Image (cartoon, rainbow, N blue to C red):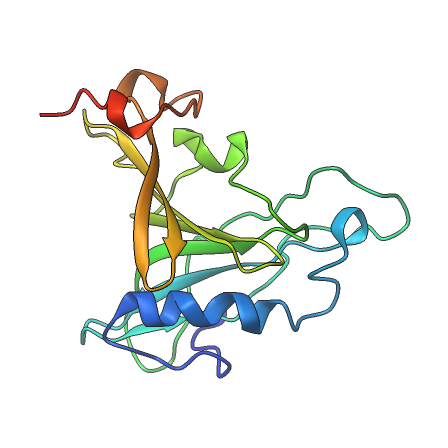
Length: 175
């Protein structure tokens, strides 16, 4: 994945980078075409100086425009190349080409988590964040962006991480 997407201003506040992603991705070809649309994936990373950057988005999957698809796939990047230095990836991000679309079961599966955070958004720029806590005996957390704040909307109990089953946040068994 190619680093530092010029459409996104770098920031020391990762949420400022996250808030820029959806409007920029929605300007890409086919990002809003629902069943005929395209998912885009990328990464949020740092070069070790406390500033966060967004990689260029890529579909990283075949684009199918002839037959409508009810679900889309986009593999999160395994690495980012940035000529300015060594990259440390914090999160992957991806779009869904439908409005009012939440994280899918596949988005929540522990086996699909590579980084500390997963960011997902739809065509209305409804933002969601997953903190999976992979390998930890504590619930994963699913948040929704409301204005400039993240609101906890669901948890994934440690025993449910393999299946991605969510529970209401008040069911947390964590200390």
